[in-house]
Image 1 (cartoon, rainbow, N blue to C red):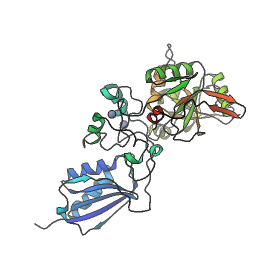
Image 2: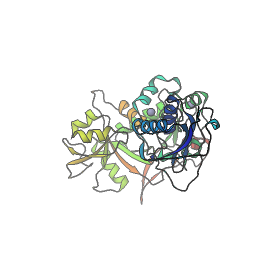
Image 3: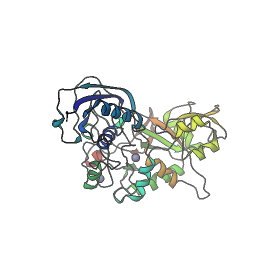
Image 4: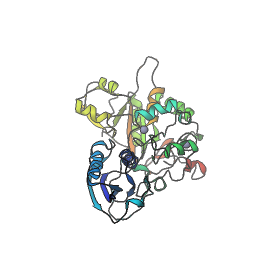
Length: 374
Ligand SMILES: [Zn+2]
Ligand SMILES: [Zn+2]
């Protein structure tokens, strides 16, 4: 029987950090093909031994079945001088750079429903706030360089525990080749400083910060990228304090709701806006306001910038600040980039100073600093 030709396929678009290589691996195995897939600077390259018909079938399946976050701009192919016998199987090979052209980098992706469920069922991830998988989690914010591999992200310094390693290397696992994979045993953790005390236990942190939020305080919390200054959006005094800290007189603040249902109590939404709000990007959507929150949020305006929770800690805050009479909280949020997105601490007490405010930084190094880098 004649040997198959080996084709080199280059896929360009948003194809790194979105579970693309595991996806290709599964399809190629499904089609019984030999070859390999790798991340390149300019996209993803597949080397595959196939008949022209099978090659076209592979391309068509890539186009129709790709991960939801991925976006394919172009698929091109050439035949190579390689031989089918150069491959024993289909594999994911380590990445390498071969071009100055740079592919698109995946944005950060809101935590997925499967991960939220895993936080309640997987022993090594019970309550873990940095849970992620190939469908969700930080991407852009942790990338130091391309191609996208763990060693080129801020997760490079975190050695996977045996449980995570098992998932990372198991092709049928949702965390197969999920670069930021982590758990309670091996991943980054939050910590907070407040009144000169440092808190590192997550449950204690949640209690502390929930108490501060309910008490009308403004807290500075590390998001996936930069800092968010957060306060209770129904508390006039808290919102006024946020304005004072930001030295922002009237520019509106965005607010975060626990879920769509609660958001619709305060705003009128169209189906398109709803789809946007719940999408993996979790954007801030400008909506027509129906009932008032604290007047200081958007003085004189009839629209409200709204978003839904996108990190596990947001869900945890909402769960812990729910009032006994079942009143759900809404948080007012303002992004603050004063320290850049690779800051290594998460919560600091905020103090007013003559020139605005400062976030008190108590320590400037040590082991705890590295543990919080994500
Ligand atoms: Zn996930
Ligand atoms: Zn682990």
